[in-house]
Length: 442
Ligand SMILES: *[C@@H]1O[C@H](CO)[C@@H](O)[C@H](O)[C@H]1NC(C)=O
Ligand SMILES: *[C@@H]1O[C@H](CO)[C@@H](O)[C@H](O)[C@H]1NC(C)=O
Ligand SMILES: *[C@@H]1O[C@H](CO)[C@@H](O)[C@H](O)[C@H]1NC(C)=O
Image 1 (cartoon, rainbow, N blue to C red):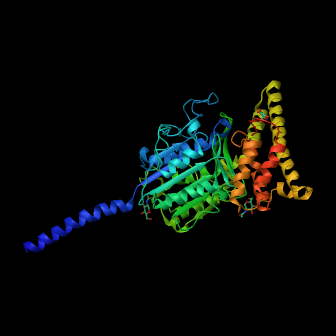
Image 2: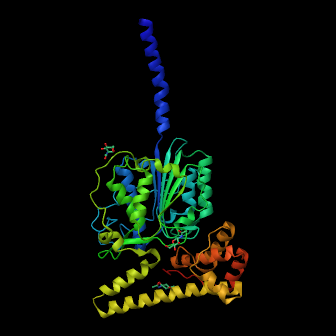
Image 3: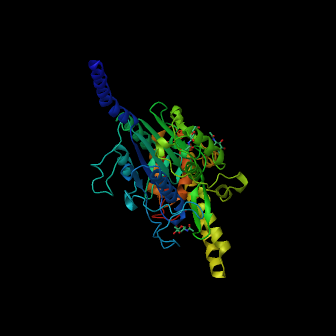
C-alpha cells in the first residue's frame, strides 16, 4: 500500500516537475511592436491609432516591457493641441496618450530602427531611444501594428520609408531565427495590401491590411475643435471591436469578418497563413478581460466614423476646405482659399514631373497616359521598384516630406512591369527634376 502511494506521489512530483514548465513554455508570452510612421498635426490620426492600440494591450494585461512603441510624439504638446497632454482617437473619447511608453520617438522613428527592433538587434540600438527590442522566442506570439501613409510596395516613416522587400525579408528571418510561434500583423496605410502580396503562407504569419494593393485607406472622425481627423477607418474598426468583445472568445477570423463588413471604404484583406485565424484575438492583444466598451457598433447610416470618412490622400484638402468654411472673416477666407489653390498647384507640379519622366522614357503619348493612369500593375520586379522609388525620392521629391509624391509610385510600378529599367528611370529623373529641396507638398 505504502509503496503504491509513494510511487503515485513520485510520479505526480515528477509529472509536475516536467509538465508545468513544459506547459508554461508551450503557452508562451505575448510581445508587441506598435509603429506610427508619420508626424505633424495633419496626420494626428496615425499616432492616435497607435496610442489606442497601446491602451488595448495595456488593459488586457500585457506588461510595458513586452510592448515596443515607435511614434514621433509631436501631438500631445503641440501648439495646435487645444487639450495639452491629451490625445483622443474618437470625438469625446478617452485620452489614449496616458502611459504610452516612448521607446523610439522623433528622429529615432526610422525603418532601420524598426527592422532592428524586429530582429532583436539590441547591440545595434545601443544608445538609441530605450534601446528595447523584441525579446521573443520560439513559443511566443508577436503582434505588430503599423499605421501610416503608404504606396504600392512602401510604408512611410517620418523621414523615410520601408520597402516591402525589406519588410518581407525581416519577417522571414524572424521565422528562421525562431523569434515567434505565431505572428500577427495589422497594417493600415494606402495600398497596404501591396506589403503582403509576397508573404509566404506557411511560416505562421497572419496579416490584415486596411486596403487592397491598389486603393487608398480612409481617415475618419473629423474633430472640429482640433481641425484634424482622429482615426483611420480600419484601425478604428478593429480597435472599437476589440474594445467591445470578450477577447478570449473572439477568433481573429470573426474579427476579420466584422472589420471587413464595417470598413465600407476599402477592401480589408487577410494574408499569410489563414489557419492562424482560428486563434483568439486575446492571444495577440492580451488575455485578461477588461470591462467591455458599450460604444458602438453602429448602423451604417449613423456610423460616426464612416459618416466622416475621407480617402487618406484627400485629408489635407479636406482640412483646408473645412478651415475655409469655418473662417469668420475675409482674411481667414482668403488665407484658406489660397492654401487650397496652392495645394492643387503643388500637386500638379509633382504630377507634371512624373509625367515628364514617363514621356521622356516612353517617347509615346498614349503609353505615357497608360503609365500615369489609375490602372495599376502588380509588383513583380521588386528590385526595379525599389531602385526607381529610391531615385524618385532622392532626386525628385523626398517622399516623407512630400507625401503627395507617394501617389505617383504606382506609375513607377507600371514602368517597371512594362520592362523599363530602374537605371533608365534614374537617368531620366536626373534630367527632369532640376528643382531642389522642395518640401511640404501634402
Ligand atoms: C482594389 O480596390 C479597388 C478600388 O476599390 C477595386 O477597383 C479593385 O478591383 C480592387 N482590387 C482587387 C484585386 O480586389
Ligand atoms: C465566452 O463564451 C462562453 C461560451 O459561449 C460564455 O459562456 C462566456 O460567458 C463568454 N465569456 C465572456 C466574457 O463573454
Ligand atoms: C506648396 O509647396 C511649397 C514648396 O514648393 C510648400 O512650401 C508649401 O507649403 C506648399 N503649400 C501647400 C498648401 O501645400
